[in-house]
Image 1 (cartoon, rainbow, N blue to C red):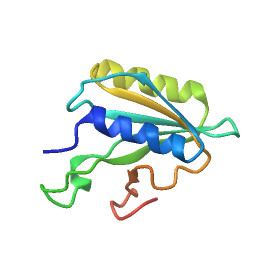
Image 2 (cartoon, rainbow, N blue to C red):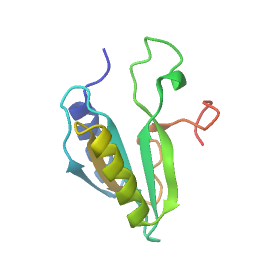
Image 3 (cartoon, one colour):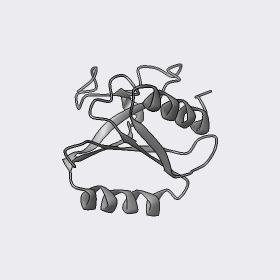
Image 4 (cartoon, rainbow, N blue to C red):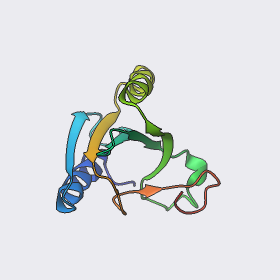
Length: 119
């Protein structure tokens, strides 16, 4: 059984604050299994949108972690807003979390486009 969404989000918020950043839940989704989208803002005014990685990025069925892929990189707020509106229309039970950190470090795992390691 995978870690419940609300527990992952709670942990993400705490860890972002511990790194000296800011984090907030912009949209609360399904407590147990809602998809989580992470909106990262930087001091430069750019944003990166992370979305749940497709299942083929998971090595096996017992991989219980959450992995993300970069959906938009170094984009403006309007592009990210438009992408999130589309995601909400597709999945109204999704979570949207905003973090304000220039370097997300190891807050969450991001898969590379080839599925190997971090981008």
